[in-house]
Image (cartoon, rainbow, N blue to C red; front, side, top):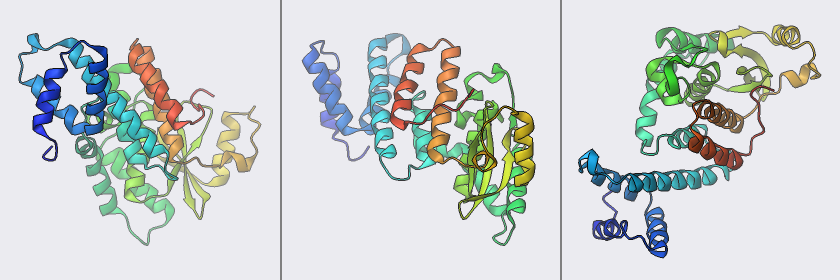
Length: 291
């Protein structure tokens, strides 16, 4: 915040109370130009006021500006040839938690990544690497799948999941991919008709192992995975090769959006559900869950 002009911020703070719509729009535009530091400043200022005296309309306005800023950052990320999974997941999480800072988000998953990296052997086989990943992720950190809303939003938000150690299968899969990517493991999603992920371990863009993240990272050989998919989805029209086609990080982001949108719709939080509809259009990923 050191680079922000405090004098200008104080002037904008005064103008925040002006009801004239042209002033409102001009102030909003300037705050967005100044970025997150300006919004953080106004949040700090509101925290100095007794809660009963805080203007609720102003709180909604600041939150709305955070969301607008985050969506614009998401657009920039998705305009790159290879969107960054970690930054994308942070931005999508921040849409529901507008004041969430990147370092706060990173603190949730980095301890798991550090343990995985420490355990990995550069000469290890793909199976050994996945086994180590599974041991750290599911056993050492105790992350597990749940099928009820007992944890509320913590079952869905990827940063909260690392703290409460329980999440819906899709959310656990999102967290798994986040750790794998930051640990340098080539593990990517295989979309299945079920609500969740199978995962592929790639070598030279070819699937050499399949992983059932919902079953504590159970490892399948390629023939065993194909057989399991045939038994689970006997009416599937996909050929063997199509069953093994892995998605990319954009797919992970798209399914995270779907899971969040579905949860907030279930919770009757229409405003948040609409925000994730906007995010879905930005990411542009076809729907996977429930197919």
